[in-house]
Amino acid sequence: MAQAALKEKKKENFFWNLGSSIITFIRENLGILIGLLALCIIISIINPNFLSSNNLLNVLRQTSTNLYLALAMTMIIILGGIDLSVGSIMAVTGVVTTLMIATFGAPVFIAVLAGLFVGLLIGALNGYVAATTVIPPFIITLATMNIARGAAYVITDGKPVRVMSDSFNFIGSGYIGGVLPMPVLYLLILLIICYFIMNKTRLGRHMYAVGGNAEAAKFSGINIKKVQFFAYTFSGLMAAIAGIVLASRMFSGQPTAGEGAELDAIAAVVLGGTSMTGGYGKIGGTVIGALIIGVLSNGLNLMGVSSFWQYIVKGVVILVAVYADVIKRRKA
Image (cartoon, rainbow, N blue to C red):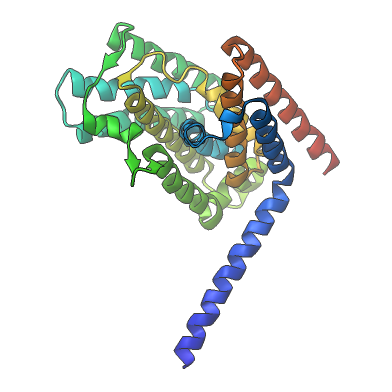
């Protein structure tokens, strides 16, 4: 009887904590949640096809690729840094993976590992230089952005690398149970991992401390170099995952893949309420921010808006979000 009562109490506590977490999440992100809902309503009124199941799945697939980048970008921006190289890492990892399969006949598993290793290596380079020199992260990642993009063009001679492998194509185009797209499944797993890191580990607490006040964090015994190295290395790995999934979805490695992807990732993070000055941000907010970017892009496509104008709209959205963050911090 005592054990049964204890189990029932634990069950009640679980649902109580879950309910409290959901309420807190809604309260903290009420503004952008209302914005997302309003955006969905407006687009669905203009074009009812927005609410079709196929289109909503397409939005989820597109958003998941952006979120792979945005989750890691959240960590970096909380640290007070930036990573401009993620789009180029997507390109080079995608072409490396597809070349391994198409040219060298490597098994898909080995090819994917090679692509992940390349992304991890570039991220580690960003992290090492950021942690051991006084060069600003903006300059470091601007340099590796050009290096990685150039490498993608050099090793492919500027041409796409086609792959007609069912097992590789399943990575980005397959479904679980005919309902859940594979990219969304990866996203759910990565969301749990990132949430755990930022909210349940010492490393996550150290990221907030370093971003809030690096000097105070140093004097409290936090190894700032290790924290920075991890964040940028993790960002490289997440960009590699995004690049491989995108290459699988396109049935080819494209040296042009990921162009402007860093813009969408930064926009998602800023819209989600993460401060560009560091020290504050939430994974949940980034998810909503990415959904806003995904819905906005999809809606503009459905309305036939030129891709040129879409760049302008996204730029305005970022500017407004950053300005709102500045005003909010001044009032705090």
